Length: 200
Image (cartoon, rainbow, N blue to C red; front, side, top):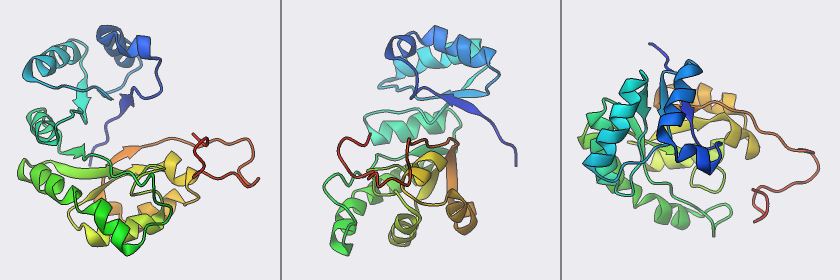
């Protein structure tokens, strides 16, 4: 198995991200294999992004779109074997009951089927505020949605008081994508609560 590293744009200032050529230059000069975080809503936007990435020897990873079907097609066209399904957010839920879990999980079934149809592994981000936050969430959701893969995010698992190593040990063959990062808090033992609206 080979490993390729891409730079994600989530932490970059908005004015920099808008300059696609400059982004590609920075990422390429830093030695990355690809870049993640761009969206394409039509064929022309994809062509423009693809041309820029090609000029800089970069691969477009997990390209987004507001249309899940288009997203599946785009990533299949790019040769990506996995992409992110729309996030199921549990903003109004603390620890979902079985009924609430079903309500959140049900819409993902069609996305899983669509991505799978195009040969793209459908992964869901392990992310604070979403259906998958903790190791326990992973267990419940993967049992309910057997076709789902994980976007293994070490920082968000830490922020949710879960040990990323537990997820890696339990579901190593269901990790479709990785965000490798840390989590920092001034006083992680001081009673902070990730569920408070002002936490993020």
